[in-house]
Amino acid sequence: MVRTHADGRHVDVVRVRVGALRQVVPESLSFCWTLVRDSADMPDAELELECVTAEVRCRACGRRSEITSAWSIWCPHCDSPDVEVLRGNEFLVTSLDVS
Image 1 (cartoon, one colour):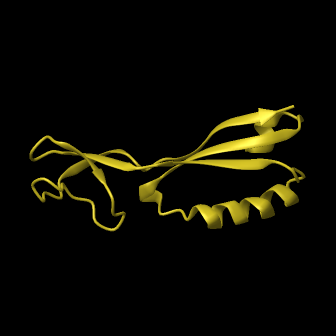
Image 2: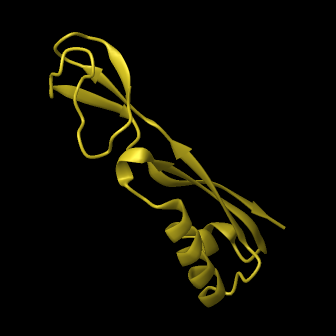
């Protein structure tokens, strides 16, 4: 995907937004990136990660809250499991720097 969007240009930086609920270990993703970039002929392309905290809106009490655990997602105010995830589920390439 990165090479396609670079359209033959040199890839300098790839920016990725990763939500806390994706349970991605940033160090592991960075290591895997070194393998991908070498095999995709982008040996000096850097990976910049933006880690996004999880936030939910409770359908029971209506309050918005940040979630600190990816293992249990419920409202910290009323303990309801009936929540809507507002952020934290992202995993996408947000931009490329090319030259």
